[in-house]
Length: 262
Image (cartoon, rainbow, N blue to C red):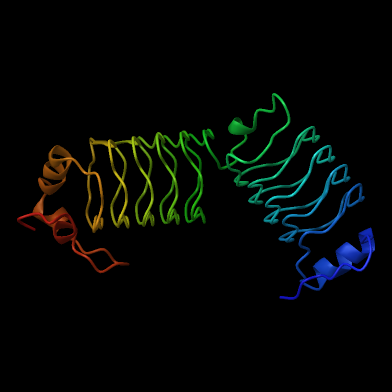
């Protein structure tokens, strides 16, 4: 993929043509540009200046807007589904009617004052994703500290390296989810479904694991922070559960926990 080379302030037609050609549009000065009503699905505008830009009704699904300056931008009725807003400055942006489902944000994202971003099904710290359908989602290295993921459907989701410290995951479906290297410190995992989950090198320090129905095929290799009591509880599961192999890692659950039987 080539990168758009800026020789002067790009026009609307320049941006649309470059996007249609599959070019990356990085670190551009697009202050005040009018891109309203355009199709910019999957565009890469990371680190660009879009302050005061008109993006009303613009389709930005899956767009990479990491580190963009979107202060005072008009994003009314825009489509930001699965877009990356990590590190974005959205101060004083107009977001009325914007669709933010599964958009990624982090602690460095600046939102308009009093904007209720936590209850719009966006993905980030303290987000409210109660019962959300996130099956097979790419949530690698997502910042989900303190998020409400109670009853969320996360089967097959990729949460490699995700930060889930203090997250509420009770009743969540984590079957076959990939959590390699994830942080689950102080997380609440009451009644979660862990069958076939990849839990290698997960940090479980002070996490609450209770009322687990099955751990068949879950791989706990190199998991950290499991208390002796929790480990004993996990090793007390049936030989059928403990003897199941993880289809992805090819590890036996009992062996991954260093249980004496299984």
